[in-house]
Amino acid sequence: MATTPTVNTETLINLTPAASAKLLGLMQEKQMENQALRVFVAGGGCSGLQYGMTFDDETNEGDSEFEVNGLKVRVDPMSLRYVQGANIDYQDSLMGGGFKIDNPNAASGCGCGSSFRPREEEAYDDYAPAAGGGCGCGR
Image 1 (cartoon, helix red, strand yellow):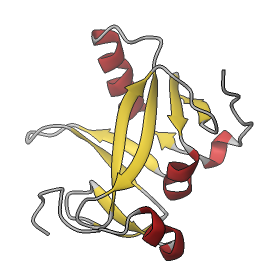
Image 2: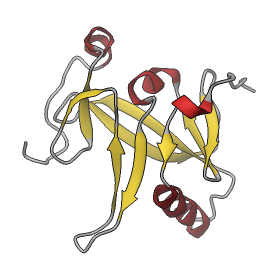
Image 3: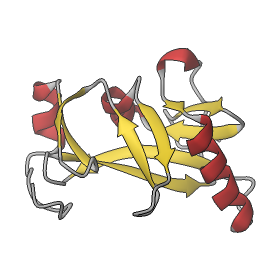
């Protein structure tokens, strides 16, 4: 079993009560109560890196694991460097609901908010060398 590092949860990722409630509701609806939200980034999207969230029942070596508003959250070390300090919100509107990520590590973002270009260019070039395309927002 992997050990989870001790981290200062105040500086990791924040989820608003609306986002936490939506995610906890989805987990309950799909009977996934023993899982956690995994937040990650991957190469791709219009701006170079794209956000990802999934439900996960395993802790990997090096993961940071913490709880926000009753929701267990996991982030791998590479992704954490790009999303640390981000705020995840859920907004419901007449045009449909969705998650919105406000990321202080983003130098720029795509129009639909699903991808971003990080401020830390050196590490970014090694992580996502083939930027561009993928989210379909048309920007």
